[in-house]
Length: 264
Length: 264
DNA sequence: CAGTGGTCTAGACCACATG
DNA sequence: ATGTGGTCTAGACCACTGG
Image (cartoon, rainbow over all chains, first blue to last red; front, side):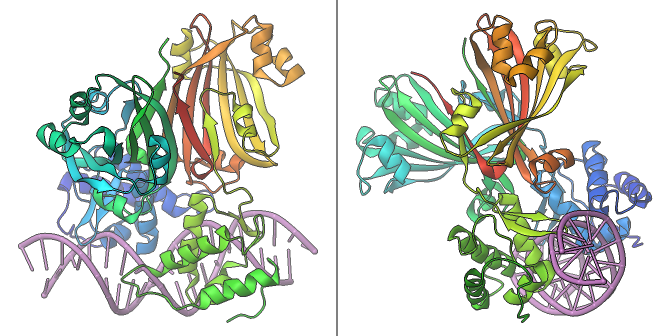
């Protein structure tokens, strides 16, 4: 075995990692080695033997530690990235995700409100704001022509600085002539609605569908491409039932649990 | 290249597959080869060059066709299995999924009703029916002791014979003393409810969360272990608001889109 | 520059399903 | 017995990051 951990977590965690790695494997036919390594890593991470946010030793070192080839080691690591426990950064290392828990998102709450339930510091970053041709769905929803304009807002939500949700919202331009100015003032869509005379609105429909992150989505969310994600599309309507917002967002699958409660 | 397709799709499709495979690749730095192969396969499948349900040529043959190693070929194939377009069967071959489209499941409809919208033949298979200790969630929901009993029903839903949804339902035993007998008569939970004097019920809460299929889930759904899935937990209540059913189901991520509409 | 993760190869053995 | 997909290896080169 290699005997030098090349710049990584603390000694204590590493020695326990080494102990776990040294344990004999079950027969390959019972459970593939890479899954057994996956299990041991899960154990190590969940028990915080390596602290959240800490860097793991390099792949070659780990492969050596677990007595397998680098390919096999990578397979176990890759699966954990799919589930969100680990995140690799090219040229840097593999890190334990600092917030592996899941967030409850309730359909009867505002976004920030429902995140706040879980504690932590929620911030929002505007990635892009401008006017575009509408998506087909939005055009139909708003009842506008395909070459009309919509106001388009790309936003990233972060928890304690770590990105967890990216969304693209579309609004009918005719209804919000001063959208950009208003939004730049407050940074809040709710305020824009209010300044346009919309005091109350409701979510008329929410759709959930699974998928694998595209390259651009993966980039802003700081996950690997093709990681499983949840796409959520939502439609907000004003009190009269007219659609005022079409929203399509994307979460890493592992970091969110969606709750749809029926008021009764 | 190998020149014999060892027992597979029709000749026409194969020759077109070969043509596509022979096209030059973009630079590896632009897009990894395995992703480029993945793209071409997606194209071939979506255009039904190989028919739904058909068997693909073997991995070694394909690897040869695409001019890459088997490992690289496998990587492209594996990703398509994650997305549900392909499904491998050990010792048999890799098949194009016959129903790659997604099903809309609406929260304001009964399950079968909402599947029927899409056409196709829905069948239901009872995997297990008996009494057990409740899950912690169900115990709390029903307000019973952890060592009380619940009626537990495992069911598999199939569309045109292909499994697409597996669920585990729990019911409070005290409320349905004749559950087993009634269910065996009609095979319908709704009928059991009715015979217990419950004419109307509603879904009070639905939760959606993503995950990777366990071994047992993968087995009944005929997918590979660790394929991304959607877990849906639902609570049904009678008219008075008392919980009468706790349901936890599992879909292959790629085969379902969940719609939550608010009546207005 | 050195270290990291990402990609790719050629070859091997295994368990499984089918004829 | 044969062909299939599933696992594993040793070694190589690349692109990216950071000091």
